[in-house]
Image (tube, rainbow, N blue to C red):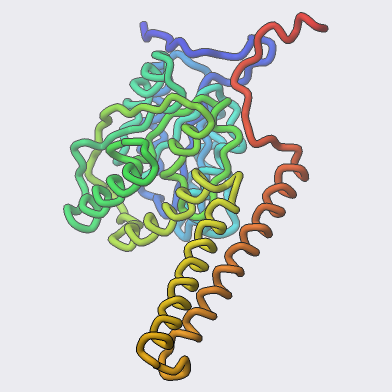
Length: 333
């Protein structure tokens, strides 16, 4: 008999499903039948109430028809069709917003992730973690275009974020729903979900998972991903350090530029007094003026950003903190 996975669930009367599996799909028509069959077999072994949410990200093949055919036979299969291709992050977000399971697992549709590893992710969650990320230690991808790009990206992300994972790009991840429900994804930031969760106080870890060679179709990623990751990291670094107090960033830049402007001005005076050079004989006066003006503009941008952030929090009724637990407050009722 299969062993039932024990997870921290909501009270029975308020409980939805135990597990939701979100599958972003883009032009994977040939992989869908085998994927769904293997997922069903793997999920049945867990002894949990589950749903499979397939998100068709504007595929141009016949994948939508294949999904509908299987949905007529599999009640646990739910389909979300996006009107156009919006990217993997948007597809994952569309699935997360509609998932009702206490645990949410994301998995690729190309059969390179192994559905049998979902049980391992759930087991790791049971040990007190909130996010479990898959690590494709033995990857079966192109050594330069995929593996090299992934290693560079992972080291860069770990260095900037301070959260050291071997494989941010692995879609196979498991989350507790109460951690992931407030995360919003934009651009290509699905790989940064563990970082977002860590900001919310989540315990994050990773485990080794199997990785299979692609049987059908072709990869949608290449070396250009490094550039995208680098740009996304700039956003992540800003959100991490300056989201609540943007004046610290813009003010620091402003002070630095004003300091440079002062140094250039003093240099200009030194040349005039001790070497007799006219102000107009050097480019220093306009340089000092430009640096000073940009420094002032940076300060003003910081003030505008502060106003925007206060408007953001007040308009949505949000706070700059999140409460993890309250003890004994119900005694006053």
